[in-house]
Image 1 (tube, rainbow over the protein chains, first blue to last red):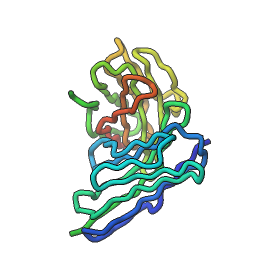
Image 2: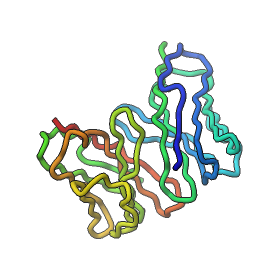
Image 3: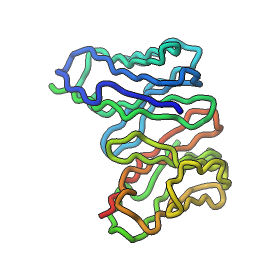
Length: 111
Length: 113
């Protein structure tokens, strides 16, 4: 059974810092890994999707890496801004279509 | 193109009452999924529709939960009777194909008192 762990559970940083969110999973036979952002009262917004054959994906100030063999992914956020404050969720899909989610990292970026 | 919509956004009911949540997927998406997040836990899969048929309902917690998708368009998730442990955020997602990325709605926050 796939288990996804996200560390840290919560993070508070001053504006401008570069930060790394971690996601680890127990079964390395994955189809893809996806990072989401969730704002209070809002749905899940997909940030980056990494296929199992890829090592990383970049979008703006975000960079996600994937190391299948070690069962890890990191989400790097450069030059953090208050608008980045949200909960960040990691989800992995194996052969099936059902993603397994982590509990998320709650990020606060204060001015 | 409109995204996945869910109604209501919030619902507060008393234990023993009935609540019906609605999800409107993105137009043309045959696949519709329901998920739930209980406070402090991860988001968990409830069930999957392909058009109007239940493809997988292995995540449904018990028979107090009933999901329907008449006509293969919108879906409803009824909880009857609601219990305290049913409180949480219920998400709906849709996708054009099973292997395709899923698009999530804003969720319905259900509070059972």
